Image (cartoon, rainbow over all chains, first blue to last red; front, side, top):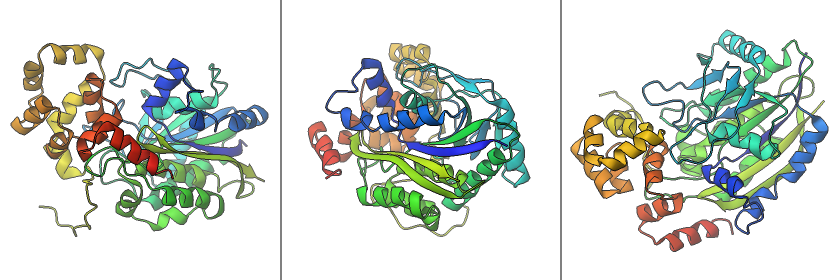
Length: 283
Length: 117
């Protein structure tokens, strides 16, 4: 059976890609963000995951409003990043783990999740930046399965539903007939709002409580409705749903506990509170 | 009308629901097309012709001409797609935040920094 080793959560912001491209990691504005990553690089070098399942949200690269799935699972041999409208250089393509994709798809449908399966899928910065941040030297040593959660068009799936989805993905991985080591990535949030007269809204108190809950009380955020989460975290802060899915995936298999490897929290990068978290599964 | 219990207002926030998705479809479809550099160039070459091609409504076209984000939102624009329109003009998220909140860019950036204290 496959071994679940842990989960990583990180904010994704298009401007991070621009900063990497320009080599600004030591610039005073960017340093507090990039300085969060070396302990995670060390952990990854020690743990050597083979596969990463990435919970993320598309930002209008692959999906448009003509067909907007609530949950979509990639089943492609490779996932290509592409121009998202700003002409920023594209990041490396990600290698797919197709057998695990179908293992997850079959299990999710069996658990009554109505998902969209994607044998072709363009991945935007939300999917490609975390790999670049976790493996800055490039040539990523992992394969991936992207799991996209709609955070663009309301109604969005409830926090509790996303938690259940994450748990089901974890079950699928734990039952996968493979000797590979698997980690989960959550790409999104934390609090931020880009549009409206509340643009620039950030809620440090809630973010810190949420991050703490992932360690000690993983279902804590499922008490809130989507409306309440938007109120507390902003219209784009709702991307924290991806973190909830990642944490839920760690609640299955041997040992339900986790230990914190590292965390970082910094305001602002662009208009966002940026969170970073690495949890190791304790078996 | 679909019946539902109205949710309490979140000041300055209008979640992009089915009503806005219907209202803003043409505008968002045009913005989605800006993923392509070729389409961005075509738009810049003749904005009016490009807007006609996507069938923008009068308020949507007026908001595009004015490059006014609050107007674009009111016309049904979605933040994730509008960002691609803003990118054509080299505007960053602080420019957009400042415009929507009536602040200077420096004031808006200071507000973000203050949120971290």
